[in-house]
Length: 169
Image (cartoon, rainbow, N blue to C red):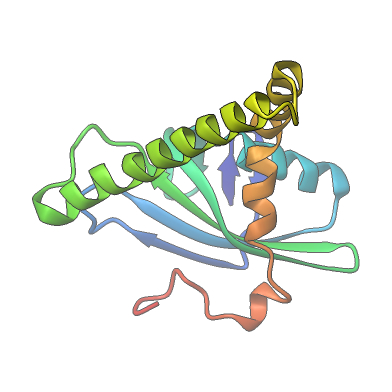
């Protein structure tokens, strides 16, 4: 049994990798049919915040972990999710790989924010949109970003793909 926040899940596939320098990583494939449980898992994923995770029978004490969806599919009433739970640690990545990871994503985010600002200013300057419309679009984007990220992970059938938690995957 895997408990993510207050949601109990029974994985059909499960793998732990504790050999990583930056903490434990759990990969699990779960199938859900109850619409309330599906919506609750989507909310947890969309929030993009660390949550307590309990690996019942392995470690019953909760551990703060970041939850990501690697892929998901929907067939009839069944939703199958492949999830990755990553332990939050205080250790910093070392070496060049750590430096690359530390600077690449912030640079990309900074570029996109700067581009968004510039295009917004240009659209307002040309009278195409008002400042209020820009603010409304930014508010909508902020509210929907987590859900959009989940939508991008959808595939035809998660079970048809190799389980990413298996060694060598």
